[in-house]
Image (cartoon, rainbow, N blue to C red; front, side, top):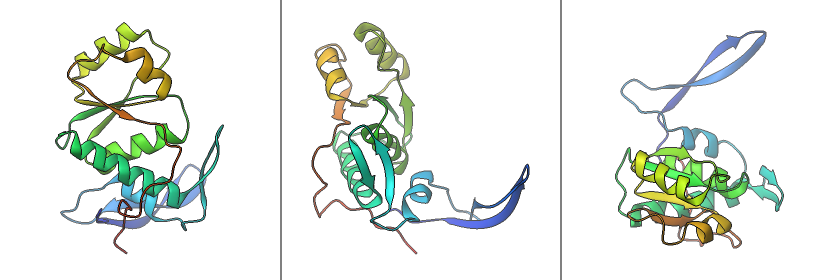
Length: 166
């Protein structure tokens, strides 16, 4: 369960007044928590080439990906690469890395496979979320990096749902 440690204050940036999150004294800010907790489950979170995706769907996939990261043995603050096309899977992967307390490191999926492998080694990524096409191109090239799927065609199971503190 991700616990929210945010309070809000009013701020003005340019001509725009808004409420911005601030950490409670002694608390850590978790950006994924802040971005995922505020909307109703049936609200649209992302529209991409595969369609519309609700916050409930996004929360479920993020929870599944957090479990995948934890199962792969990654520790807090570890770099997690994201090598996928822009879209729902990319956003969910980014938020999962943040929710797990890790560092999301986007790697352009337009690079040649040998360049991607070199970058994964350079950043020390023990795990990478990859799209289907990228997984095929990188097969056998990224030793020491757990390849996790950034493609989601089915909803998350009931057991993997993010719950947020009020």
